Length: 120
Ligand SMILES: [Zn+2]
Image (tube, rainbow, N blue to C red; front, side, top):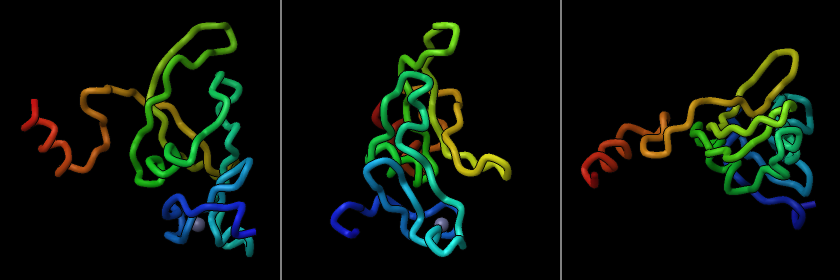
């Protein structure tokens, strides 16, 4: 239902719209099985992050990393990192972990990086 979903960005697989629902994000073309893009909001719950928000997904869909702070491994160890969208043929779309440097996000467009440098 339209009232229950919101547009959050463009699909990294097919370029169509990705919409957010209560429990998941999904590409509009997944309905007719032409696209695989589907991620549950609770994808990182096992690491202690309850939910992936719409603004976070919007950043991910721009092929940028989001900061993931204070996650927890099974052994209790805490860690922080960046999160990016990844695709695996067996597991589908997911959130992958990458190094996160708050001062210089690794995948900002060059234009933005230059701007950040000027400000510093
Ligand atoms: Zn798609």
